[in-house]
Structures are given as C-alpha cells and as structure tokens.
Image 1 (tube, rainbow, N blue to C red):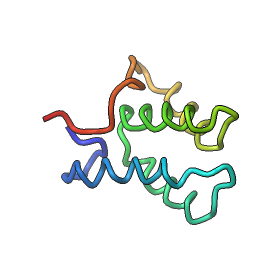
Image 2 (cartoon, rainbow, N blue to C red; image 1 turned 180 degrees about the horizontal axis):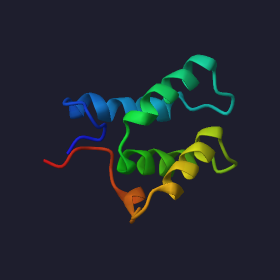
Image 3 (cartoon, rainbow, N blue to C red; image 1 turned 135 degrees about the vertical axis):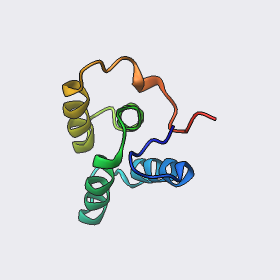
Image 4 (spheres, rainbow, N blue to C red; image 1 turned 120 degrees about the vertical axis):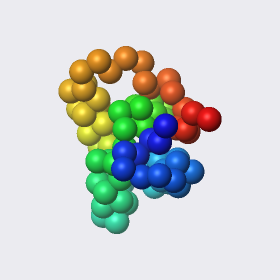
Length: 91
C-alpha cells in the first residue's frame, strides 16, 4: 500500500512525509508551506494522521499544519485509529 494515491514509489512517498515533518518550524516559510500544500492532497488518510501525530509531539504548543490536518481528518468518515500507523508501506 502506498501512502500517496496515484504514485508508485512508496519509498519516495515516505521521504516526502518525513520531509514535511522536518520542514515544519514554528514560523513556517512560504516555500515550506508551498511544499506542504502540494504534498497534502496526495497523502492518504493514514499518512495525514501519522504526520499530525508527529507534529503534535514536536509542537505541543500548536502549529498551523496541525490545525489544517485536524480539520481534514475530522471530516473523514470511518477514520479509525490511523494516527498510530507508521508512514511506510506494508510489505
């Protein structure tokens, strides 16, 4: 299973999610926000939940991307407990 829909290279996808986590800063730069905005629509619910969980750990005081991800995940029917999943394909 790939974390980004429509892509075939799961290894690249995993690195993109981790890259977004790395680029998250208290003051988000415009280029980092642009990268996040481009990656977000390609993420599955599982990938979004994983990124949300790790952003919440890194920024307990809050972050703009946490707000965005929470809004998207809450709107998803049948969410389940995807936040505990690791960002890697099942092998």
